[in-house]
Length: 512
Image 1 (cartoon, one colour):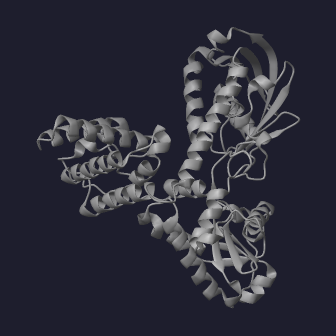
Image 2: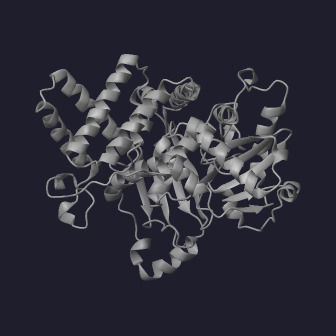
Image 3: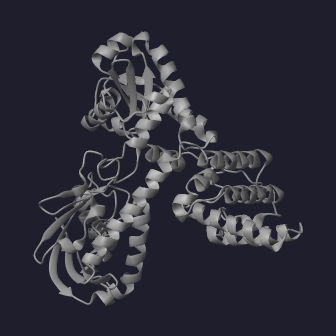
């Protein structure tokens, strides 16, 4: 853990600030401290999660400060939308090898100032009448702060960002005994003959689960309800490229986001039935010896916490996210309809590379700019493991990840290809280390009936196989092409079309 403190604070805590790698200041293990009156704000530099400690003057050494910080962080996690079973994992990953520094990132200082203003201005949005604890105070700040642009509700709240971080980076996997009895569920194996994909595993589980329920003389109504719930939960896990074996607590996230994902409100009876169905699924997993006793206990605890948190008074966060999703969908549909009659022909060229590597694409004017970037990167075989920007000479659109210092007009998801004219040129820069640059030129625009739509995206022509990630940019690709002549051959668009569309979908899911 790296903690940025001002020099005066460092002197007060009797710590010696060290020089650290600048890149390490924008990781989940980097925090910054700001003292404002009776409050100390300790904020995560990457996730912008605030932790509030009151009366900072009482700490006169680093040990007392760290003890208070850890205590408040743990209490905040107990209120935040994460499974309790993961709190220890997050705590242990954070509080290791603590060092202090006086270095600070400009964006971090800006966010700290925002939190300081909310806490100290007379007309603060904090509900002081309810006498919030430090953890409640921090949660109010996190719920109210929307990254990217707080005025337009674009992006995620800080609470949502922290939830995603915990869900994607910390897991409590089950440890099934893969014996001869349950080898049908084995889909990760050293033997290719035993490998099954997650979909096939899910089908096997559902078939056996139905027989399990039938053998216990459950009614058809109960069987259908339980199997449908299990199938829906498997699909939720698959959306995160996981199975219920990979993280026993994913069921918690499934429950607290059920209403948001399905655009519906669960009654108390429906929520109770869903909990019963999920617990029955856990019993089946234990019966099949896919869950140990500890696995079953963790699964059931996550179900109970999910139902409790969904019914709690802290549901404002979820409704805010639901409203933002609805508004985003309306905005997207409005923009798409406005440009749906236009058909664009583009030529995309990889700059600073010889012989020329290029693609010709035909896309609808209702193509949103983030999708345009995915389509271009997919056509050049980028693997999508790096950030990118799109520039048109007037705006610098960046992939909206963790950037709260950009306005809504600089959001890729708020603009469409239909905003440009013939002759316009844009530059897509991918991987700020290797610095791949693609020049996009609008060659032609045609009009077609809105009733027919803009048609499917097409890869019309091109040359060169594509780029290779993490090879050192165009200079590295030139060196490889000397030994691999296939890199510079003309593109077979008939063979490439289906693979290109599939890679586009994969990139979109990866960045999402």
